[in-house]
Image (cartoon, rainbow, N blue to C red):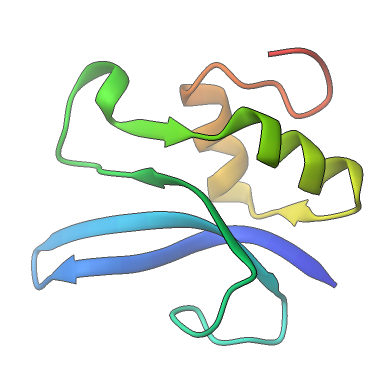
Amino acid sequence: MVRIRLMRLGKKKSPFYRIVVTDARSPRDGRFIEQIGHYDPRKDGDEKVVLDRERARYWLNNGAKPSETVVSLFKLAGFDPKGNG
């Protein structure tokens, strides 16, 4: 099964996350199929979540399941996985 989830980067106490499409069996920070965005929890406003909406829609239409955290980040970015956005 293909999942859309976060991959942690950065250093200790300074996290940065990539939003990646990966096989559900691979480790959190292991191999991934495609990077579709990133999330920086230390920034404010529109720079906090950057998302390639076209690729996210493509993977969702092809059966990728987003994690609960990624669904909340989609909402924060103003992206509706079920509709237009």
